[in-house]
Each structure stands twice: as structure tokens, then as C-alpha cells.
Length: 459
Image 1 (cartoon, rainbow, N blue to C red):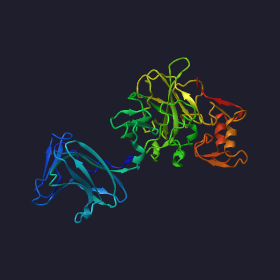
Image 2 (cartoon, helix red, strand yellow):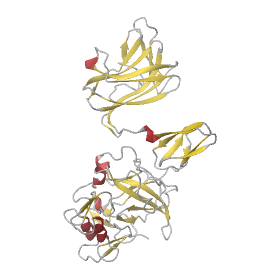
Image 3 (cartoon, rainbow, N blue to C red):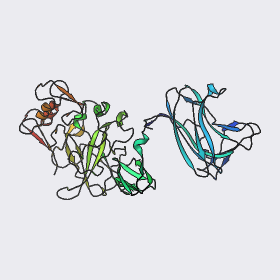
Image 4 (cartoon, rainbow, N blue to C red):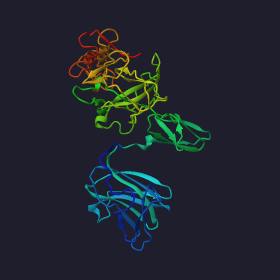
């Protein structure tokens, strides 16, 4: 699920003190309220025999709307005193007189509690009910936490999230795991590889977490920031053209740039690259932790994602950026691949503290560490060489890099892609014309004197 479009469409689905409205057929079936199974009250469904009909069909009280083509998430908790099977489904009111159902699925029941989750896409616009069905040979089950929610979804490939490693040799083998955080079926973290005994197999599964520490810290810092290159005059949100054009890399880019990153190889979590409005991804950023000493010694780096509203989140969307070390007593700086960094001189006093670099009165290292854009502070754009300076003329200047990226001969050329020379972060590198990247560099150095050099305000 990447977005919930409704609340729970099922009335009285958690049975806190009654099972009012939940009825079914045949009439000899029994529906009762119990408090000794599942969560603070549950429904007990029981079909004693097949004297009227061999199956018991249980329905929720009130119909809810379903739309053709829409996706729905179904959740419920089940348990039983026997080993059997129950069928869950959604049936439109216009199909009550025929065997057609919009969606059905079978699941097993036994003495173990099961918290189930299903998805289906409706092929009908109608009022509908959720129904549960069991046979008289599997006469009884308990039901709780019934929920139907209309959602936006993203398909996940189980081949990328679950790995089966088979060893058909007489000696143990070690297999390298893909990038990401992995656990074995015993719940233990796997550190980059998995060892399988002779003539055996093991399963590894991907864990969506901001870090792969074992077990890792629970604290962290929250960060808000803006990139001047991604800001569009008069708009309250940064532009997300890189995401919209499919250019944001799936894997963090800062390890390849020479940074020692604690979450090296981190990949973007499911649903993060969808169009989420104010929370759409702008680009990868780097959050840096510093010691509270004279040189602000670097204590750790974390690759993270910047959203259009300025919020920095982990690759999985967690607004708490965790480090291997405690953040308390440290400083935080923010970095981007073609902007100048900034460092906050305040010391973090607690876990979960917000460092808002968009505030004009946030104390930062040096002078003019950031620029003001529409009354908000933002990192200076234009450091396309990544050397900590923005230069329009002279040796190693950033303007020439833009010209070379488009070919170095025809100023009107435009190059599409994810490039550091794309100073305004629109997905195109251009030297002339509207929204060109050369002007971003000139603005950063002041505009009036092209020989001025803008240097990062860092220790």
C-alpha cells in the first residue's frame, strides 16, 4: 500500500463488545461474541451440521461501495480450535442471486493466530459485502479485526524480496546477498552473506529498515532542508522533475562519490518514487554527523532522501535518520551532490530532535552558509565539480563543466539525464536558453562580479 484512500469500510469489524449485524445462512449456524480469543472480543462462527446446507456464509452488516478498477486491501485475524479452511471474499449486491464474486481467497485455520492481508482489484462498481465461508466438516473459527480499505498500490516482486539458497554439494557454501538489509528465517541479521550446510537450503528475506545494524540504535535526528537549485520562484515546494522523469537512482550515489556511508548501497523503498505530492522525492542527500570538537570531526554519514516539502527521510521513508553512534552531543551537516553543504553549530541534546536548516535564524558554521529563497534558507546551488566551491570563471570553474557536458562545441545543445551539471535539477543540462544551468552558477557567485568565488562554509 502506498496510499490509503478511505478508512475501514466495514462496520463493527473489531467486535469490542458485540457481533451486531453479522449474520448469514443457513439458519442453524451460530454467530456469537467471545472474549477468550484474539483481541478484546471476537466473533465465533459455528456450523454444527449439514442438515440445512453444508456451508455457512457469514456477511458483514452494511454494504460498502466498490469501484471498477480500484484496488482494495482486506485484513482480518483468525484462529480456530480445529484444523480447517475458510474462504474470504467480496460480493457485489447485484450478484447476490448468482455464484459470481468480485474476489475470493482460501486460507487455513488452526490453533495458531493468523493476521492476514489480501489485495484485490474490483471489476465491478456496486455496493458490496465481505463474506466468510466455512464447511460443516470445518465447523468453527474465530474472527477479528475485519477491514476493507480502498488503496493505491505498488506491485512488489517476491523474487527480489525473498531468496532461496540451495546447496547441492557435500561441503557448505556461502552465498553473497544482494544490497539491502537481510534476515534469515530464525530472525537473525545476515551480514552480507548466507552460509548453507551441505545438501540443504536456507531462506533470506529483505527487511525495510533505515539501517542494517545488529541490533542497531533506536535514536536519530530529524532534518529539514531546501536545495536552491530545485526551488522554483513563488512555489512553496521544491521541484521533483528528476523523480517524475525516472532519473532518481534506485541506489544511493554517495558511496561512488568517495564518502564512507553507513548505509552504503541503500536502495529506495517500495512506493517512495510514486507521485506523493508534497512528499514526493526530490533527490538523494547526505546527512553527516560531527563530533563536538574544534575540528567538527566527521562521526558518520547517512544517505537519505529529500522530499518536496523539505523533509529528509531514510530510503524507506522514515523521518528519523539513525546513525551507528548516538546523535546526542553531536552536530549535523547536510550535503548534496551539486550544492554547497551547511553545518549547524548547535549540539543535539536529544534523540528525535529536528534540525531545520530552512530557518533563517538557525546557527550555522561560517558566513552565508546558505542563500535565502522566498524567505526560506536553502543550500547554494552550482557546485557541479563537487570541490566545495562555486566558480563562474577561472581554473576549475563550474560553468565550463556545464558546457563540456553538452558536448563542448554547440552552446544550444541540451543533454538529458541524472548529471551533476544539472544545477537546477530539472533533468536537463543546458548552457543557453530558458532555465539554463549556467545562470544558476552565476547567481550563486553574486551575478555582478563573475570572478567571485562562493566557498562552502565548512570547517
